[in-house]
Each structure stands twice: as structure tokens, then as C-alpha cells.
Image (cartoon, rainbow, N blue to C red; front, side):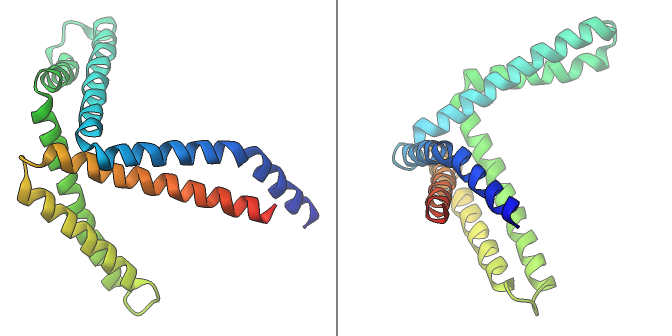
Length: 181
């Protein structure tokens, strides 16, 4: 038991400053996304587009070294490259596409939450699953109703809220660690 307490104190000391920094930076990024959603939306789209282009280059190199004569092996790097270039050329359409994918994710998440809630209904906590499902359903509907015109705003706000709560939870975790030490 004494070793466990010492280990916890060591963990608390080692995570102290990094928890505060990470929580603060995530909260700051979240606030940028909430107050300047188009900045975060375009940053996400820009990052994804270049990630696809880099992945296409790496896959292309692999296919070139492994089997450069097979057309079927060139499809993946070609699709990644075309998709990445299209996202670079048409960033607003890219944001709309990413936002639509998030709306569909939220829609499926809502139904998954409802299914879990009804499966666990007699147990405690099932109401929170229903609430989570309703929130996901509402967010999905809000996105779909305004799509594609509101994509530039909604993507940044949704990701911003997520980052803000991630940061705040780390900050609260840091406060709890400080109290316990």
C-alpha cells in the first residue's frame, strides 16, 4: 500500500506541469475554434489535405519499389493524391465534406447510444446514454439542416467545443492532482 501511495506521488509530480500546459493549450485551441470557427475549419481541412498528399507519396514510393507494373496497386496512392489535391484546390468544399462526414458520424453515434441505453435500461446510468444520444442527434440535425452553407462555421465550433472540454478536463485533473498531493 505504501509503495502505491509513493508511486501516485511520483506520477502526480511528473504529470504536474505537462497537465497544466496541455490543458491550457487545448482550451486555448478550443476557444479559437469557438470564436473563430473558420480558422479551425480551414486548418483541419489543410492538415487533412496535406496528410493525404504525403500518404499518397509514401504509398506511391512503396508501389514503385514493390510492383510498379500493377495498375490495381497504383489505385490507392492515386486516389489519395487526387483527394488531397482536390482538398487543396477546393478548401471550402473540403470543409463541407468533412462536416457532412461528422454529421453522419454523430447520427450513427446517436442511434448507437440509444441502443445501448435501451439495452441497459434497468441499470443506473442509462438516462445519460439517452441524453448523449439526443445531443448527438440534435448536433447532427443542426449540421444537416444548414449544410453546406454553415459548414465553415459548424466544423470549427464542434471541434472547438471538443478541444475546450478536453482542455478543461485536463486542467480539472491537474487541480485534483494538486489537491491530492
